[in-house]
Image (cartoon, rainbow, N blue to C red; front, side, top):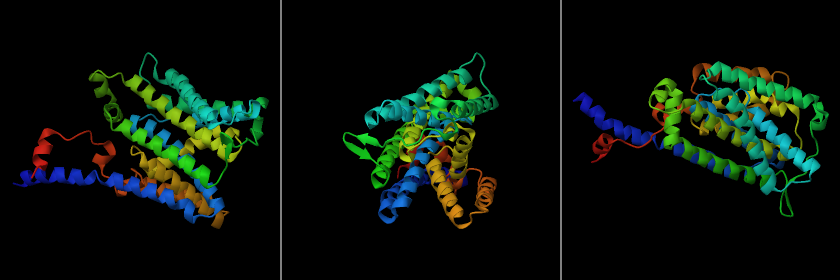
Length: 345
C-alpha cells in the first residue's frame, strides 16, 4: 500500500516540480523589464553591464553545467570577439549592428572551433584536467599577446570605440542599450532552453552523468563535446561584442584568466546546469560587489570572498537549489506511459 501510494504521488510531485523553473524564469524576466524604470541613469548603465555578463555566464553554463567541460578559458572567446569588433570600428569605421554582432559571434565560433578541435577531437578522449588546463593556457597566452602587441594597444587596449549604430541611430548606453541587451539575452536563453530540452540535450545530460555509458550507446562523446563547446564560444563571442561597445574600450583582461575565473564563480554561485542559475549568479555577484565596494571600500573583496565560500560550502548546487529539485535540474524529456496512466484521474 505504501509503495502504491508513492507511485501515485510521484507523478503529481514531478508535475508540480516542473512549474518551479518557469516561475523563477518569469520572475527574473519581469524584474529585468521594470528595472530601468526605477533605477537612476548610472545604475541603468551598470545593470546593462550585468545583463551582458549574464549572457557570458550562460555560455559557460552550457559548456560546463550540461556537458561537464571545465573551460577555464571562456574569456578567450569573449575577449577575442571584443577585440575583433573594436578593430572593425577603429580601422574600418564599421559599427552597424548587422555587421559587428555577426562578426563578433563568428569570431567566437571560429576561435572555439579551433581550440575545441585541438583539445577535444584527438585520437584519445581528453580528460577534464587536460581540457581545463588547455583552455586556461589559451586564455593566458591571449592575454600576454594582447599586452605585448602594439597594434592591439598593448597594456592600454583599444579606447574610444564609437557607439554601435542601427542605420543613422547610435545605440548609446542607457535604457535603449539595456533593453537591446536584454532582448538578446532572452532570445539566446530561449534557444539554449530549447537545445537542452531536445534529444541533443538528453545526450548532453547523459554525457555529464556517465560519459562511458553514452559512448557505449553509440554516441561520439567527443564530437558532442566539441559541438556544445563551439556553441558556448559563439554565445561568448556575442557577449564580448556587446560588452566592447557598451564599455567603449577593450583591454587585455577581457581575454585573460581573471574574467575566465569570474564566470566560473557566477555559475557556481547561482547553480550550474540550469541556465537561469548562471543569470542569477551573475546578477547577485555583480550587485553585491557593487554594493560592498561602495560601502566597504577597504575590505569588500574579503567580504565577497567569504560570502562565495559560504555558499559553495553549504549549497554546493548553488542558490537555485533552494527552489529547484534535482529532477528539474537534469530536465524532463517527456513522461513515460506508466506515468501518464498513474497521473490520469
